[in-house]
Amino acid sequence: MKSKIQESILAPISDYLPRFEEVYRDTLHSHVKLINTIIRYISRKKGKQLRPSLCLISAKLCGEPSNNTYMAAALIEMIHVATLIHDDVVDDANLRRGWPSVNRIWKNKLSILVGDYMFSKALTNMIQIKDFDALKILSNTAERLSQGEILQIEKVINKDMTEEIYYDMVNDKTASLFSAACELGCI
Image (cartoon, rainbow, N blue to C red; front, side):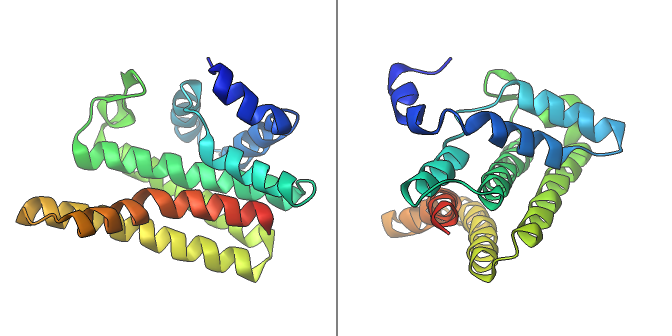
């Protein structure tokens, strides 16, 4: 259920959200039944979808969303969800959004593989966009996401997290995907 604040923020793009959902769902579809089962499970308890919403809002600020906008919004969400699946494995988490995590139900191997599947589908969407600037933004973002996660693990192991390193890590792990969503919407 969305709060009144979320509803007011999403109001300008409310007509675009069903199309985003359709592109997201269709793009993730596989001929492998188990992949579809796990994707359906993940999609039943979706989050706030802030990143694809920011992509659509940014597109709206620059005109109207195009097919590329919907592809970009879908791939941003795929990357985000894939990182959550991988994070749950790394953190040995049992719950995600109040439900048993994918790794709790299907174990680590399938969780990693489904997260990888989602990343690969995001790559497929990137190619379909056929925009070099968008590809550059997305590849830099994918690198930063991985770097940020590994930096966090390194600093936890070494127990030498400084405030500066923490902000660098958050910038890579979180802010980079928000930034990419907005930039892609504008492109």
